[in-house]
Image 1 (cartoon, helix red, strand yellow):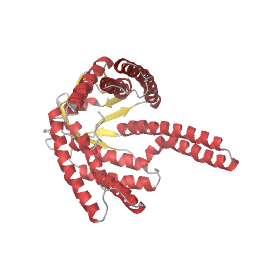
Image 2 (image 1 turned 45 degrees about the vertical axis):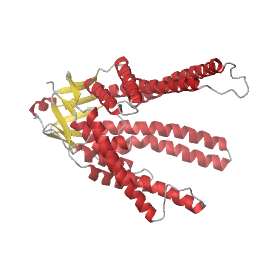
Image 3 (image 1 turned 60 degrees about the vertical axis):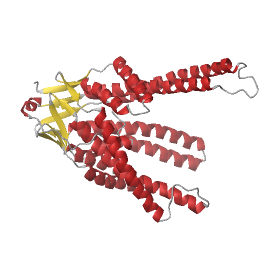
Image 4 (image 1 turned 90 degrees about the horizontal axis):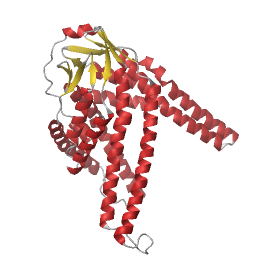
Amino acid sequence: MSAQIQGQYFGKRGPLFRLYIVTALLTLVTLGIYRFWAKTRIRKYIWSATTGDGDSFEYTGTGLEKFLGFLVAIVILAIYLGIVQMALFFFGLNLFVDPQTQGQELAQIGAIYLTLLAVLPLMLFAQYRARRYKMARSRWRGIRFGMENGAWGFAARALGYYLLNAITLGLLNPLATFKLEKYMADRSWYGDAQFEQTGRWQDLYAGMKHVFIALAIMIVGGILGFATGSPLLAGIAIFVGYIWFLIGLLYYRVYAFNYLTGHKILDGQVTFEAKVETGRVAFIVIVGTIIIGVLMAVIFGVMGFVFASSMDVFIGGGLSQPGAAPSALALVTSAVLYVLALLVAGGLSLVIITQPVIEHAVNNVYVHNADHLNTIQQRAADEGADAEGFADALDVGGAI
């Protein structure tokens, strides 16, 4: 094994796009049940296309495992939400009645937000468990990754850090980013070797510079526009600041990824380095979004023409007839074309945006002092990791 390993990604657009379309169609005809197997197959492809020193990663999760975990999570969520609704009903709050007064309407809105707030800890719990499951089902050179149980501890800390972040209007976002990643990284393993997240959360403020610039543009521009009586100036400043803010968020995510990766240590000796470029990621996302947008506009334009033509054929007199309505066959044809268009859009997003971003990230990650990896031994299988059931049920496990 070389002293330094550079990650490499060999995934291709064609095979991944075909895999996505096939699994998406199977998900459609099974009314969504196959989605657990679909995600598993896509993960297996991406993991196997990711290599280090010529050895591919391996994903060992199964669709059945994920499906059973989802069923268990649904039952637990139903019981939990039932208890929450009973508590709300006890205090006179009911989501399932038609409000008759403004006070009842406000109370119902409050009940909705309280329900969402009650689900938030479970969403954070699911986020940790999803990462733990993916770690437990990943291997490299036959050695398992793993992660200690600590989902409720993560959820409690995340609630606290996010509350601080909200109170400080985002000023403590680097604190939340660093502390939560450290909590997860310090509980992660490769074989019998433990990861450690080092560094300082204050160092992440350098990645926030474009967010602060964007906010300054919007605030100063708005003040000047108000002071000079020029709504156009304020509008331009807000628009420019908003675009800059979105780019700033992307810059921060890339900066944080590079910093946190560069300050991880495995077994006290193996170090890592990441050189992901914000410009490259932004280019992939922007160009990919434009390409997909144009293609979808063409597809939906063709769909509109087909729909109008089918109405003309199946009605017999076309749209010009008073009271003409589309036939059942026309509606079914349009619905099928619409669903297929959405599937194509999802597949294009995966191969034009997601996969190139993964490729760029993997190709720019380096492992230093890799010789020490030869001394790492196998770890026992982590049977305690659930199969992302809560993540799937709460829709926080949608990412690959």
